[in-house]
Length: 60
Image (cartoon, rainbow, N blue to C red):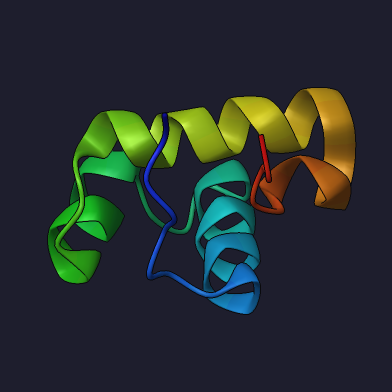
């Protein structure tokens, strides 16, 4: 079972776009949000493969 993220969809999208535009990096953004850098990298991967829908919480 996965945990629900306390991070809003809008914040995830903003972070992903900053990283993809190379205005920031996953390590820095993760530290600012208090999450693991692998979480941010996962958001980026999901966004690249599934777009905006990939950032939404899974209900499974």
